[in-house]
Image (tube, rainbow, N blue to C red; front, side, top):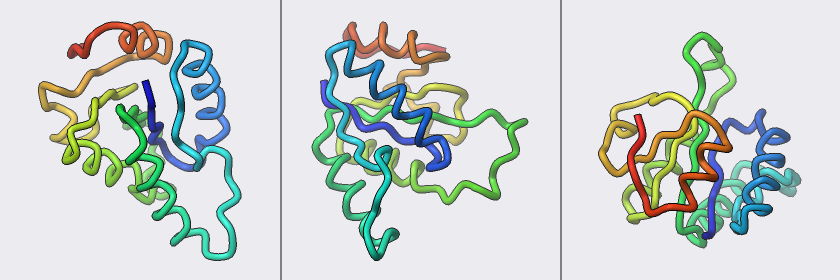
Length: 130
């Protein structure tokens, strides 16, 4: 399965490890943002690349934040936009962590506590976990 990983940019190095785990499980990761290096206009390039990367994916995996982490100041919200695009285009939606907004409560959103749980869930037909 082709998977787009969405997370806060400052978790990029952690997501490189997640991508490696997903690839070892036989999946393709389309998220190039985790590799860094966006060129001379990084914001514009990021938006264009991320939309294209998400378009190539069958599934979006969003990594959410725990409320006690209090990182709202560092988050710019791109992962929420990516979730909305994936929702609107009918992609498989997986969430690792806690629900952060009302759209995460939709029945078609699969909820996983950990990356190993996610990998196990991706091996089966889509299902909802709470």
